[in-house]
Length: 113
Image (cartoon, rainbow, N blue to C red; front, side, top):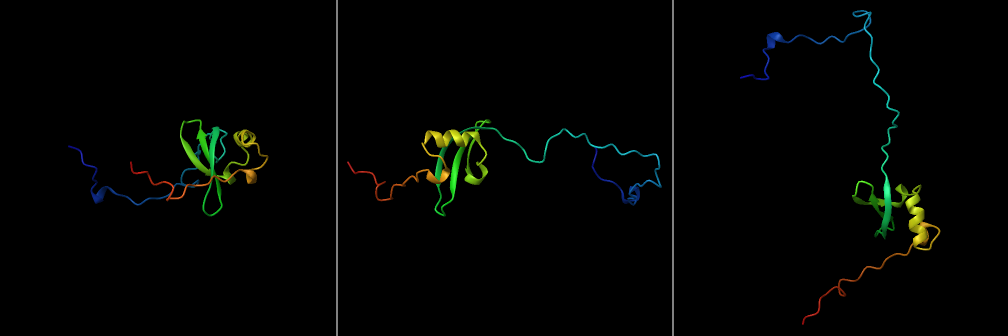
């Protein structure tokens, strides 16, 4: 049976390697794949919007990986899907999107039959 344990007598102090100790040492640079630090996700379409209580506007995004999330309007400014969504709603800018009214809790009560 093997245990991941070492006796203290086997341990040595760490000394960082440098050019004086190892003059012929070459450092391999990691390969640059040309990707920037920002990850890019692809939006299939915008399928809804909502106004939060604090006045913030969010859009329901259908991502190409088949999941949906609510994203703040600030994250959606440069999307062609946003242009299509605004066109479908007949508005030119997000400030003209209609705020959906929520039914009151009184109106949600079921009828007693």
